[in-house]
Image (cartoon, rainbow, N blue to C red):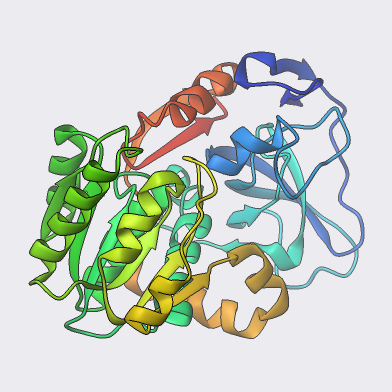
Length: 332
């Protein structure tokens, strides 16, 4: 088998393609012949030792895969050789063969392309958990999405619309704004790439309030962080909910007096821990997502794909925030 390995701490340029022994599944595991691997922001962090998980080197990044089961370990009864599946691996996905715990592998519909399956669980799982479980979003409420053209942002647009919310997509360019409108966003905001100036922040808050109808937004989905966070909190309506999803722009500092003045909540969204701590709820959420997929209400938008040998380029594209929707690594 081949794998794109991180052998030293560094960026995408440090990854190397090497031959590796084909792994054998142990008890409770299956081996998957990988067809596609999703590319996600944690992949850019894990190779720099900046993620919660720090696997021993050498390791392949890639926490989300899709392919075909080609070997089954002892004690596995829910999967068989030949099953089309997706799997959450944490890391190791940028490889032609992957061993995964059977409990973290899910059969996919026959009509679901591997590229879409490889981009499905993390983004839609995160956004569904955020909007349904953490924000309890309701029909008719307004939803602001920061970083709306990225993977989790796109999922939040579709899930927000499916929930009956008014969706305001905040992005950094007109190209991204049009992409979000095509997905169904009701309104778009193009924000400055430099939000450090207080006047720029105030203008951003005022624009959010204006588009929400004047009183502020009910829910903020923040997958950006940094200097974008405070003006978004300032634009919350009474009893609004601010969802902490990620912070590629840096970890923000929020004046807590704002939560008192607005009666609002700052709510953490840690989907990975949720799946481990609340497996029954996670299973129900996955059922929701496959139903919405079958109804055509959600669909991963794969805008680019790279062969395994160019996985570093895929990570660089994501790191540079140039991605519309999702990027996959394919195992040609």
